[in-house]
Amino acid sequence: MSSNFYQLPPLLVPGDTVKAIAPSGALKETAALEAGLNIWRSHEYKVKFGLNYNKRFGYLAGDDNIRRQALQDAWQDPECQAILCIRGGYGGARLLENWQWDLPSIKPKWIIGFSDVTALLWSLATVKIASLHAPVLTTLAQEPQWSQERMFNYLQTGKLDPLQGKTWQGGTASGILLPANLTVATHLLKTPLQPSFDGVILVLEDVTEYPYRIDRMLTQWRLMGAFARVKGIALGRFSRCEPYPGSNSWTVEEVLRDRFTDLNIPIVADLPFGHDGANAALPVGQKVTLDGDSGKLMFDE
Image (cartoon, rainbow, N blue to C red):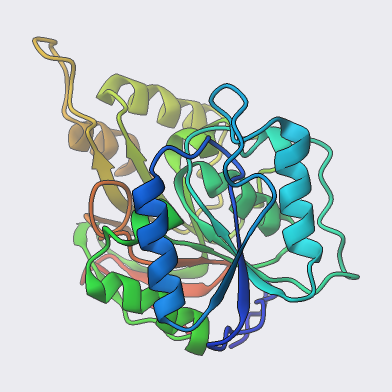
């Protein structure tokens, strides 16, 4: 498994040790956490807990220092082969202020998560280290079997089957996959946590945002010229993004079409990832091909 642009951490092997940390919000879903842990254990991985997994500091899983220390300990632990984020919520960007990834002295390892974990995935992308946009521990048990197996298969073999969506704009483009939660990513623009958009296939999802807020965020991207170097756009689920009841509003699909389809790049929508449904694993930094004619996102080996 190789990349011309991003360094990929070593593949996992059953029996490896992985570590669970909470870089963002405080744990609420204890039963869901245990179910997710059991899935990792059923695949013969040894799961350790980071020092903050059950801490609370307001809505955060401990203050910034303890969450930063948990990430650092897991990153530097020579026995740990992957870092499993327990949940999203909010707070990942806070612990990354003045953060350094201790490269090249530390061998890269997988960081796995989505939603607020976008901040960690994008931070790693700034130093060209691949990671995995995939279910957190507290959502893993809700995934359909094919999605769970897709994640483990990728981590162990480096191979992924294509994903099928719906074509919005034709054409074909190849580039580096950059998945994100739209709201989190918008707040990372023009900060040290924003990776280069040069030649990327941008992959977006979101949850619980009114259509006008989606419009406002995407208009900010447009005003900044953020889409100028993007080669294609792949859209997942924008769940619970319905208009306010009784409002005179576009739907979220109408907003997305309005803000994207004049960019003259391939666009594929309705791919099976995001909140409130199947969340197919998407490797940050993997070279991919987006076929806007067939509606497929294909992963190069």
